[in-house]
Image 1: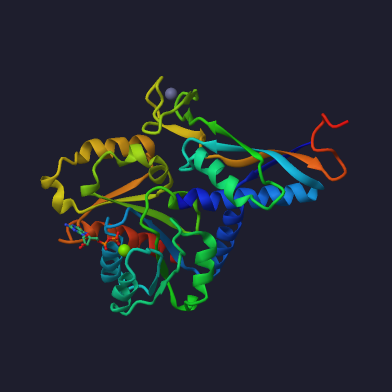
Image 2: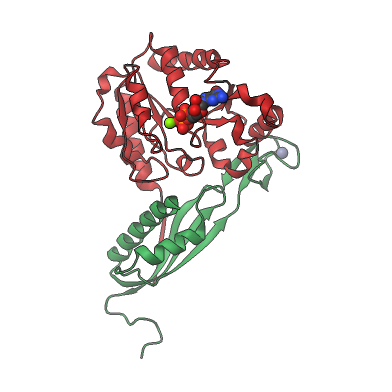
Length: 124
Length: 218
Ligand SMILES: Nc1nc2c(ncn2[C@@H]2O[C@H](COP(=O)(O)OP(=O)(O)O)[C@@H](O)[C@H]2O)c(=O)[nH]1
Ligand SMILES: [Mg+2]
Ligand SMILES: [Zn+2]
């Protein structure tokens, strides 16, 4: 789907800029946090990343997606609970819940090899 | 080596949206981002809104729906400036597309701007455009189970238009159950039930929007 392509392009450009400013010659891993409220399908991101990273230092990097559950805090009793996509109401008192997580779309961190460094710690 | 980044993927879009917002603020333009599935009645709703407010306000439309190129034409026929955005097949409008389209409008001649987003209930909710108000339309034939499938659209919108209520008795759409679910997701959402075809309920929307526009002006 087009949506994940746009999102993945943005992820790639963030990752490449960070890698460059850290003197990377290769990106091995990319970790992304995706809230369950977002419409972003992790598998699509991985699929597109494989394709659009070709010819860059991120080619072949593993993309790891961490899904963030939907959580809400009750505006009446203050309890925090796991909410469903269909219902944010508090399961304890029926109060109105305010979303506190689940909308994230973050590049969390990358693992890189720096220039002048071997392609892994196993190198002699 | 590990590098911590913690950057919002949508940060670039958010930054441009903020620029748009600043510009709209300067020019005192109220901006409505209209989102719905294809065929839900976005263009019909815009035409009804033009009809109801044309005597009191100057308006313009940014047309992002890729399905029908005639939409911009239908709006221009009403004497309202309309810009057609070429989305290049994207499933949503982003802040940069809006920024570029603004160059084609005389911003000093506009009280409010309606943006017809791409027909899609999934993606547009994630892309801030710098708008003042997010309005979504759900039409009766789409069924009352949509909040389950597209919760973000329901939590991000300020106003929900239930369109095509003239078809209520021809479907099993349960309006009360639907509104109940919506309330549980977004208790602040303002809901209007109307028919762009018959005009039923349109006046309530126009009155409410007019009040918003007037308080925005002052
Ligand atoms: N029955 C009925 N049809 C409507 C209503 N509003 C719009 N339509 C029809 O729905 C179709 C799609 O409308 P349009 O405004 O182009 O939808 P858009 O794709 O969301 O812009 C058109 O054939 C309209 O005439 C309504 O309130 N009732
Ligand atoms: Mg349309
Ligand atoms: Zn509670």
